[in-house]
Length: 239
Ligand code: URA
Image 1 (cartoon, rainbow, N blue to C red):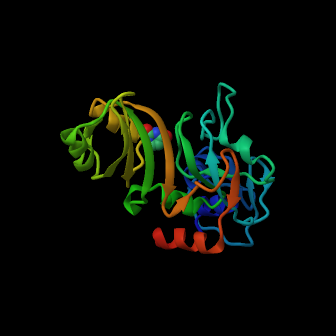
Image 2: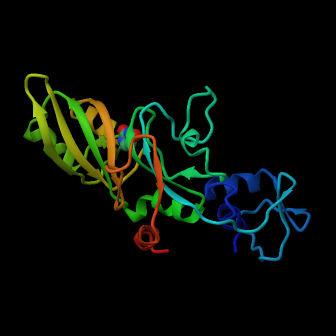
Image 3: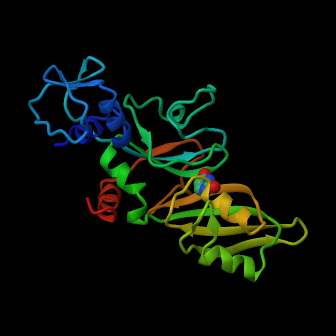
């Protein structure tokens, strides 16, 4: 197995982060520093990270968190803000969020120590569906909705087609609730798309990631994925 993959499987870090750690010279194989993430390792090799011996691939954990607003989904925060890891502290394993949600976004967040699966679920080529409920300011007309559906120029690239439904609108309060399904996952994508049609997002909730929903889970709580759900994620990313 490739060294970076081994580290990701062992729950050390995501595959990308593991590659960085290897290049930084923090990983040794049988006592020798190896700084090539693609190097092949065998199960009986002794691998250390920062001098600590790994005990081989650990048990894989997959959870679905109903993320509340107010938590950041990066693992470390320099400003000491609450992170999604604080919500899964009782699990004695290092888990990583699959992709990210903005601090003020709520909804489905998958967390796992399965680096391979995580890498593929966030890779644009697998076109994993993400469904959002976005409350936007003002009521977008047919032209604006059409632009949202067909693609908008954001930071020099055109967004992939999106499925957009107006699920609620209030002329009096001047807002609309849009259900937006996208297959990309660029940073702040939904907010940027809505801003581009001049209807900025005032509240954002992710209702679905792949086939997983959080509607029946209280805000701030998590549950383990079922074997069937894990299998389905594997199938979606051809693992
Ligand atoms: N798009 C956004 O703008 N923010 C999120 O948190 C997720 C998708």
